[in-house]
Amino acid sequence: MGRNVAASVSALVLAFAMAGCGPEKPAAPKPAGQFITTATRPAPVPVPSGKPVLTITGAVTNQNDDGAVAFDLRTLDRMATVRSRIHEPFVRKDLTFTGVRMIDLMARAGITATATKLRLHALDDYQVELAMADIADPGVLLATKVDDTRIPVSGGGPIRLIFPAGSAIGKNKDLWIWSIDSITVG
Image (cartoon, rainbow, N blue to C red):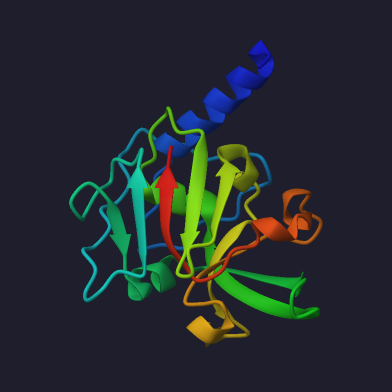
């Protein structure tokens, strides 16, 4: 890997690790490829009430569940402040998704500066591996609703990964994953 690429990836990972976001205020839109960083620790993630719908393990520091960051649907919905209308490639129609930016979710989990990849796992054991750079576009969402309705498991819910229109990585349909139950950060 060239020095410039390695430096860019390191800066991106550091920006993820240092970014703070809290559930109290919706995140301000960020221009593509730019990250707002702070020296503060991310707001604590509330301990899930009931069974978590998403668990993030690995290189995370904002743990709330025995070495992991666990989210219930209520916490994800509070973070889900972004709406995006896209052409969904599997149902072949335009849909409006509501979700949380993946870059904001990773900042909230407190990913470490050494993190370079994510492995997303679905309820049916389907897995996708992405580089941190793949989720840098603020249009990459972890969606909790479609057309203002909770996404049922039978429709790919309760949470799924959404790529923005025109996303180079989103053109690979094998990377679209739904019914996500865990993310491993490495």
